[in-house]
Length: 342
Image 1 (cartoon, one colour):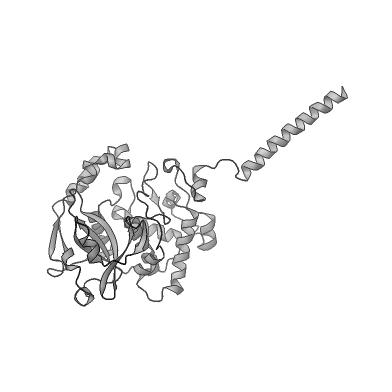
Image 2 (tube, rainbow, N blue to C red):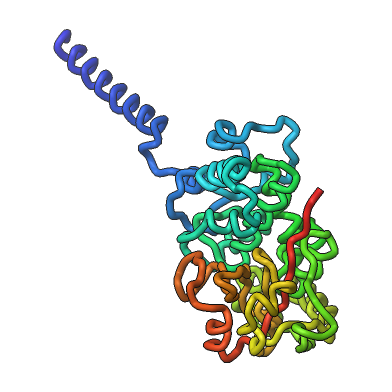
């Protein structure tokens, strides 16, 4: 009988040991991670399964400090802790490292070589603020460095400050409501950000803005199946259509690409380093096809941009005129200058 009890005791002890080992493994993260943890660890996940990530993270606490009065909307920001840490570090380093360099150019250079990645704002089924600086497209690149410039103007160095500025830039009237409040067409983006005093269009009655664009946008509502949110939420289509129709017929002066071979002596009073340019397209239903940052090099106009051709953020070595002339659908540029924020 004693032998039987001893045998049963050994079996029970073995069972307890196995259970304990599984608990320890789980607490150490050795089991499969949930989607939020994968985002925080910068791992690949199915974007549809990722809920918004709380803005308060260990990296931010260590580098930027946490505001106890954090805004409620910040609880719906999606980001990785690596990205939040990088943003705060760049903002803090700018205090001593920028040395008077144009802010847009300085902040843009901090992302040179970052891979070009499209559709980074389409994660999930519900609109929320997405911060992603490990993969950028032409729009998110410009929005990111413009938000940083706004922080620098106001001597704001926290991740929350950055997110607040990014939201103001990305959404109509600076308020995120749903997918339809995002400024999808650059005409909307330019108008809204000019109204908020974030940028100002650089325009003249004559030279060099000698061409006129008449806006006629309908690409999104004519092709809803190309847009995840419109495909999943057909109720958004008439809302977007209403905004499209409100923009159609408006005219904007722009610089035709034939004038972009003018040197700095002729165009330098009109185009400054760090100006933002939207490239006008002849493609039906669209207003612009690309967004770039302008700068002068040896008296010749060049661009810094997230390039789908180079697959990364670059300071383009090719003169901007040559780039434009190689693209038959590119007609010219509308120029916007970031404004000093108080």
